Length: 82
Image (tube, helix red, strand yellow):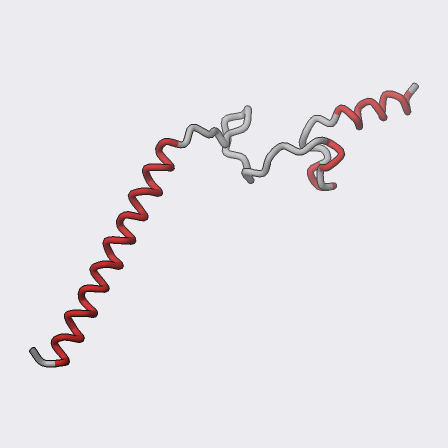
């Protein structure tokens, strides 16, 4: 067998190995994804913008301050009104 044919067969072999590996990886990802029971929808039924965990009110970023119920801020506002 000539060296060129031998090299081409090796390249074909490793491309086949790579293709099978990628196919197995995709199948595993789809399997894990299908078994995932998590819910990333909010109360209105729409998907959340990010999958970030809920943060306590004191840890919210300034642009997120009005988006979630903050019991500490509510208490401070009630005390300020009194």
